[in-house]
Image (cartoon, rainbow, N blue to C red; front, side, top):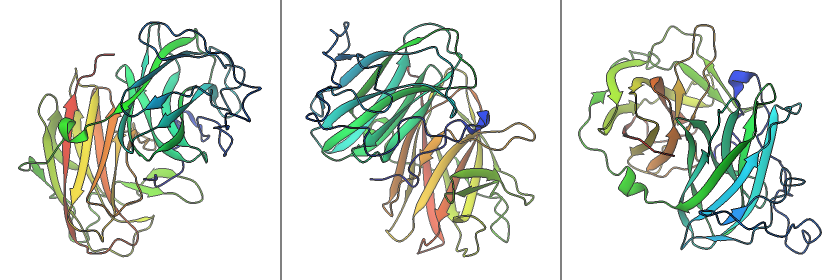
Length: 353
C-alpha cells in the first residue's frame, strides 16, 4: 500500500526540505549489475545478520545483502558517520537490500547503540522503484515505523540529518520483523473523549492545513481555531477519541474537514501506536501527530497514517518524547459518504532499546 506522498519532508524544523536518502529507481541494483560494487560481507557481530560493508556506495545503491525477511526477522548493524552535512542536510545514509518473502505487515526499528545523539537519525523503506513505503523519526531512544509490504525487493535505510557535523559516529541496529498490529493496538472500546469544539461551520478545531503539491507542507491555519482540549494523558492505558468528519466541500488545502485533538504524552512513554477506524469504503481519512509547536513556529509532523486508501483503518507507530501533541484527522479531498463518524485508538507503550 503506497503512501500519500513519496516522502515526508526531512526535519522541516531545521529548514531542510530534502529527502533523507537516495531518490530514484537505482537505490536497489540487480545482483548482476551490482557485482562490481558488492563488497564481501563483513562478519556480523552477535545479534546482527549483516554488518555494513559498503560505505563507499550505500548512500545511493543499497548493499546487496541477499537477506530475506518473512519467516524470521533481520537485523542490520552499521555506523552513521560523523561528517559535514551535504547541501540537503544529509550527514550519512546507509541503505541495505532486503527480500520480503511473505506479504504482510512489518515492524521496523532503529536503535543507537551508545553515545550522545547530537544529530537527527531516522529510518525508511523504499521499493525497487525508489518509492517511499514507510519511515520514522528518532525520539525516546529509537525510531519506529510500520509498513504493509508485498513480496519483493526493498531498500531499508538508516540516516542522519542536521545542520552541522556531529561530534561522533553513531553505531546502530536496524531491524525488520513481521508485525502483529492487532496484538499491539487492536479494537477501540468506549470513548474517553468525544469531539465537541468543531463549531457550526465545522472549522473550529482545524488548526493545521496539509498540502502535497507542489511540495508536502504542514502550516497553521489562518483562522482562529483551537485543538480539542481532551485532558487526556497517554501513559500505561489505551485511550479512545471519537469524532466525525463533516460533509464539507470547500477545504483550502487538500483536505475537507480537519479535526485536531490535544493530548499529553507522559514521562516514561516513548511510543504511540495509533489506529484510526471508520465504516465503509467511500471516505478516505488520514491522521498525523504533531508536537505542539512553539510560538511563531510551523507544525512539524512526527508521522502518521497517510496511506492512499479508502479502507476502514489507518495505522501508525510513532516514537515520541514526553510532552504535548496535536493528533490531527482529515478527510482527504474526494471522500464520499460524509459526514463520517470515526474513532482513534491510542496505545501508549515503553520500548527499551
